[in-house]
Image 1 (cartoon, rainbow, N blue to C red):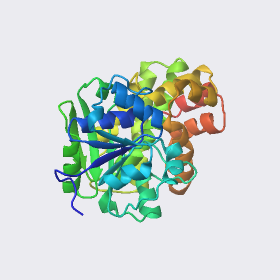
Image 2 (cartoon, rainbow, N blue to C red):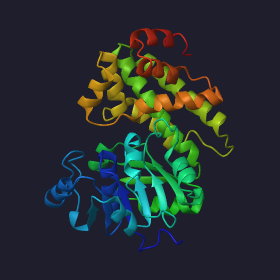
Image 3 (cartoon, one colour):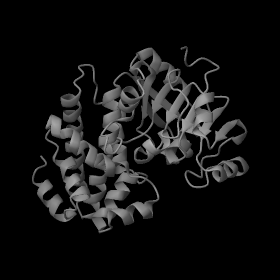
Amino acid sequence: MKLFQKNTKFAVIGSGSWATALVKILLDTQKEIFWYVRDPKMIQYIKDNKHNPHYLQAAKLDSSRLRMSADINDVVKNAQVLIFCIPSAYFIAEMINLSEPLDKKFIVTAIKGLIPERNLSITEYFNRIHNISYDYLGVIAGPVHAEEVAMERLSYLSVTCKRKRTAEKLAEAFHAPYILTSPGTDIYGLEYAVVLKNIYAIASGMSRALGFGDNFQAVLVSCAYQEIRAFLNRSFPDKSRNTSLSGILGDLLVTCYSQFSRNRTFGNMIGQGYSIKTAQLEMNMVAEGYYATACIHEINKKYKVHMPIAEAMYKVLHEFRSPAIVFQALSQKLK
């Protein structure tokens, strides 16, 4: 299968803020984009108004070059490169509707979470369930927030595939005047780092709501980075892994500190006393870190990596412990 030629067709599966940002980027680099948008009314709105009515409304979209469909199979059938950008909590529900074969497709995940209850990353799911070779799987991550893409502020994308040349070609497809790309081959490291940083962003927001200051935040994020490195190196050792790359350290920093971070916002709300359900409803967006805490907790039963911050978030979010009490104990463990 020849990929990333001039006639290669790209499709985005999903219609949230990050999916919309990816569509905007690809419209600036490709002639046309196939886009799976579940709601037919939303499709018509985008055609008429040239922006997403619910997310990232500042991103202007040339609808004349968008091939939108509410049928996931129509979109998958017509494209060679499929970029999945569905919240992990809804991923399986969407995949149930997919009957089009995937054996001649290159699959890219821009999903920032693990599949709840199955405790699988998206690439692991496609490899194990659909028998897709890792040669035909890739990962796209930040550090980048969709809101800054909409404003065309200079942003960076990390792109990983098993083969360096494939990563370079995929990265070229996303290289726009306001997007710089960094290709790599550490699929596992990037995908799991993206999952983990959301947990720590929740911790960052929660600590701020509890009255902890910048000094504590600095220690918290530094220790979070060490937890990510320790987990990656224990669960999937890779001598060539570079954990100082922008895709790992940079993504952690921007997610923990940015005003646009939904996971940080979610943590802040929990720290203020919101219930999980109320916080989720008020945000109207998925905080992937909430689901990731449970998945990583289960996965780490096998590896037994010392991860006090991740475990503290599990206690608050899934054992319903008091954030104030949990953070008081956590503060004595961080050094």
